[in-house]
Image (cartoon, rainbow, N blue to C red; front, side, top):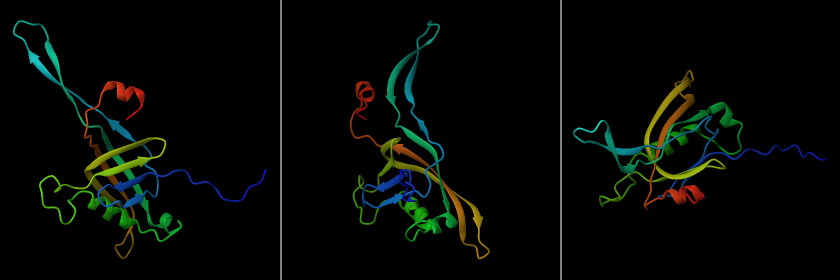
Length: 170
């Protein structure tokens, strides 16, 4: 058995700005992922009936809530290439505002994001919220370690059926 000394790096989570095509590979994969799906029902009160009648209204957009991205300047310095952890912060912040040059109402929205976590989930979404927690600062005030907690909300442009979900097409 030969060993070449190289250790295969596991696939990392990648975020892609669908509008610009810019992508950002995460320094670490999030340690957990919560996927939330809510079904909306109208509750109809029928006089004299002992219970409410539930009438299907819609299914809410799928959410990946509280996804934590951990960024460490010391770890980044050990990675190939010139990795600047603050570029990831700028990338996330740019996903919360419309791109330059948008004029019509439909285009005046933040860009869509392709969230790709190989072998786990791929979803086209938007950033619903982002929170930065600066965990370690340098003596000069520079950021050494921070976490970005992001909630993504799926964007669907077509009707989805239960059969499509069961067949794995989506």
